[in-house]
Image 1 (cartoon, helix red, strand yellow):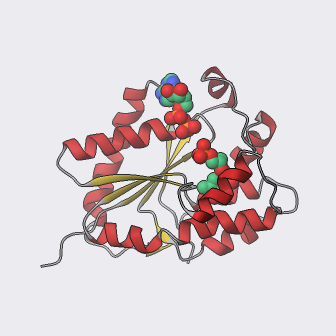
Image 2 (cartoon, helix red, strand yellow):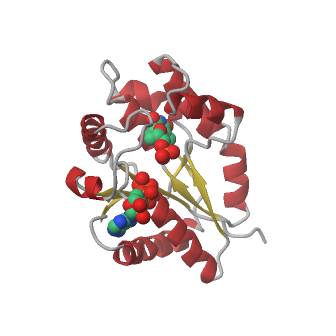
Length: 212
Ligand code: ADP
Ligand code: 2DT
């Protein structure tokens, strides 16, 4: 008998919404309940492509805007065989940012349509659940200063937020909006419940293809 597959769970949101904190909390909780769960994050800065992206984000190098968009997408595609293997082995993947950040960030730049930005990510493993951590810019500002990486300005983040709102209109993706302005524990409780539900639903279904 083949084992039941794991679920692909993505957390999205603007900077400092609590994505990384909540991914870690969720992986810990799932592991404690006896599930095999692992965290992934995009960009994955450990690969050769990821190193090009990291250097760009740290402003150590400049890359043309279309080019860097395609590198972010390639950085997801290069992980697809591993992701599929883990899901088939019954491992739940909890992912910090995915194609939605890819589209929201590039399409916040002048001259980039959502459609153009979505194209290279069409057909990626489709998340069973995408939770958007909703936090207004003032609350985010209270969580600390922006860093020095590219894209870390409030004007750019506001446009990114608008693009996320547009992406969330797409009902082919299982979006859930989470109020991220509460305590870490309160937010975690919601995320855990939604994840447990989707884990039991997903195990009997094949992994879908994003935006197809
Ligand atoms: P992101 O990955 O979305 O950028 P992080 O998880 O790194 O966000 O959190 C950004 C900062 O906010 C960290 O200092 C973290 O400890 C803090 N933080 C995360 N969640 C909350 C919360 N619910 N309330 C207050 N502070 C939080
Ligand atoms: P963190 O490593 O702090 O999450 O920041 N980004 C991310 C893109 O522009 N395109 C993408 O496809 C992805 C996944 C968001 C990474 C920065 O890179 C941006 C913030």
